[in-house]
Amino acid sequence: MWKMGIPLKIKLFIWKACNDWIPTKGNLGRRGIPCDGICPICSKSLEHTLHALWDCYNLRYARVCGGCQGTLCGGVEIILMSYAELNVRGRRGRTRRAGEGLRNDRGRVLACCAQSCEANYEVECAKVMAVYKGLMYCREIGVEKYIVETDSDSVINQIVTGGSSESRYGGILDSIQGMVSNSRTVSFRCVSAKANRVAWVLAGEAVGLIDRVLWKEVTPMCIKALVEDEQRI
Image (cartoon, rainbow, N blue to C red):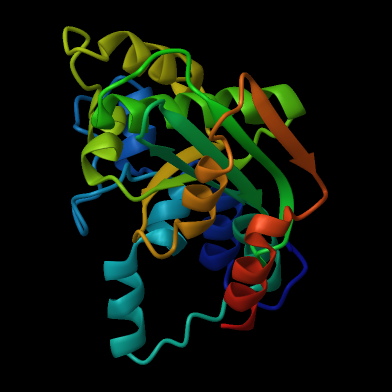
C-alpha cells in the first residue's frame, strides 16, 4: 500500500481504517470518551469503522447522490468485505425457536443452525435470545469477524446502547454485551424482514427439536432456493 501512487494522507487514512483507528463514536467510547456510540447519520447502529465507511445506508446514499460510485481501493475493499454476515431470528409458537445463518459477503452459506429455546420466552425476549444464540454459535465454530443482522430495531438499539439490566430479559442483554464489549470485529445491523428471511426459515425448522440441528459448509434444503434467489440479485 505504501508504494501506491496516491497522496500520503490517503495512505494514512487507509492504514487507520485497516487498524480500526478512525475516531468513530464506537472507538471513542472504548477509549473512555463520553458518547452514546450511535451513528449520528442514521441514528440506528453503533458507529464503528465498518459502519462509517460502508454499512451506513444514509452515507451510501449521500455518496451516490454526490457522484461517487462506491468504488474502493483494492486493499480497503478486501478488509471491509471480508466480514461474514450472521442472520438471526426468533420465532414464536408453542415453543420459542431460533435460526442462525452465517454467510460471506457474496451470500455463500458458511454455517447454519436451527434450535429450540430452553423456555417459552415472550416475543421480544425470544429475539434477544436469538442474537445470544447466534453469538454463541459463532464462538463455538471459531468465527470472530462478522456482522449480526436482525430485523428488530428495538433489539439492536438495546444492545448498542446498553439496554436495561433490570428488564425482563436484562440478563440476556448483559451476556451479549459481555461477549462483544471488547471486540472490534463484531457489529450489529438492522435489516428488513425480507433480508432476514433465511434466519426466519431456519427458525421454523426447529419445530419439534429437543436440541438443535447444525449445518457447516452445506446449504440446508429449506433455504437453498431462497439463497440462490438472493445471490442472483
